Length: 75
Image (tube, rainbow, N blue to C red; front, side, top):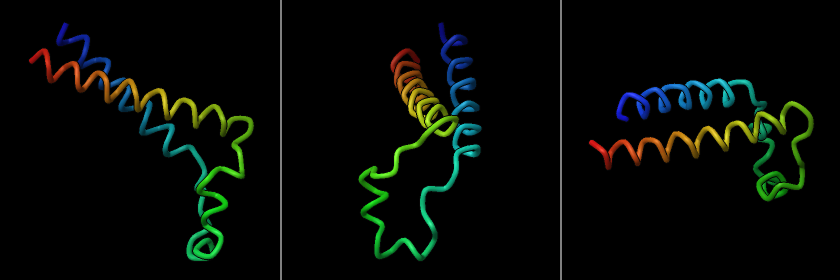
């Protein structure tokens, strides 16, 4: 069981890293200071492959956190 949890954490961590690295930046640097609230509360929705990357990031983060918690309880 522990080897399965370790393998699940490794796979989810690599998936999380790659999905974060492939996703585009949502801020425009210092130019977004004035209008940062518009992008913060989701007025621009991700489309296409970026929407898929966003969902993969969320799912892999949840899987990683859950597997790390379960592994800490088991060991």
